[in-house]
Length: 373
Ligand SMILES: C[S@@+](CC[C@H](N)C(=O)[O-])C[C@H]1O[C@@H](n2cnc3c(N)ncnc32)[C@H](O)[C@@H]1O
Image 1 (cartoon, rainbow, N blue to C red):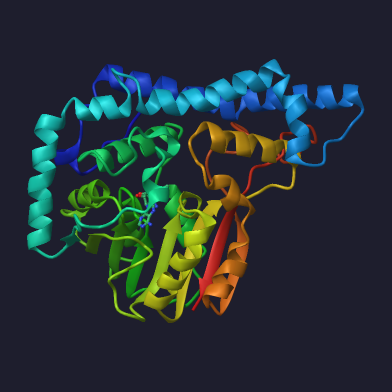
Image 2 (cartoon, rainbow, N blue to C red; image 1 turned 45 degrees about the vertical axis):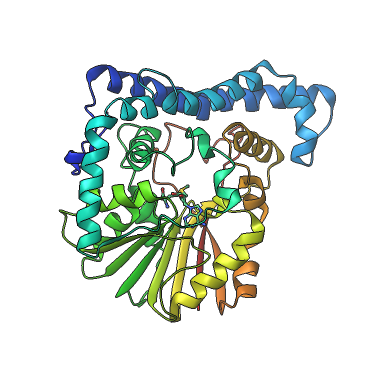
């Protein structure tokens, strides 16, 4: 079930039908990531064994995969679970939110106006959106997260329904923060692409004395984030900015963290974004984050690429293959390291490969990056 969040003023009425529908959608996802992926892996192995070949690259796997009914069904599920989550006319997240627009949009505007007055929220209506950001409806979120006034709320609802019912969608941030180097200063912190703002709120749970700034290019996101944070205490600030041109002074932050940000940005602009975050970090400051990585296994790499394609993630393939530590060092970071991110959810045995099973589907990989100025 969806958990109730504290920003009750900016929340839709989640009736029983809405919750039942999203429980169904979530289980579409669980099935496609679990048993259906396992079926596809087994069918793929039968097919390559019968042909007597061992594909060495993801491209070499496709002729085998394309012919498999299991893979065709896998592709259907991977396109449909997101599409159903966001974009059906009754209980899809976007339709459910927009059905309450008349009541919620003015409420959010009034809260945002209060945030602007008290200096906690900064919007920039003249901000020029980069083409890479506007040309695609990322992860099938209709019209992206920046065009409709309630897109921040839609985004937050959507992320909650992505996770299995028993798991906390904020756990991902706690896992990232557990990689913060010992002794790192945390007085002033930047959430580099905050989206709905949950990263900032989770940071404040363990670092209540930090001054934390959530930056995102999408106004509806930072407005929603302010609304969510405003009554929780903590020293949080929100602003609409392009990460390529931040309005902070040099040497301003002790830490900048990110979650699932690199795949949103093509490799070209990424270099400029790294230079900019380096500029606003203090000497010795930490740049820490998590992003999708690449497994060496060609079957899993092919599934990963197909998922990027099906889910409108045009830069994710380049992201999985990029050497970000090299790019970070080129931008001027003195150290940049790559580690493997371990998911705490789902609990072992309920989904995905079992470590001791040789026939198990090869693991997907997510990376942790830790760089220092
Ligand atoms: C995949 S979301 C990640 C959001 C959040 N970090 C999380 O944990 O869910 C990517 C976010 O990056 C923002 N974004 C993309 N390009 C940006 C840019 N150039 N400057 C600032 N924000 C950007 C998008 O608006 C979106 O909210």
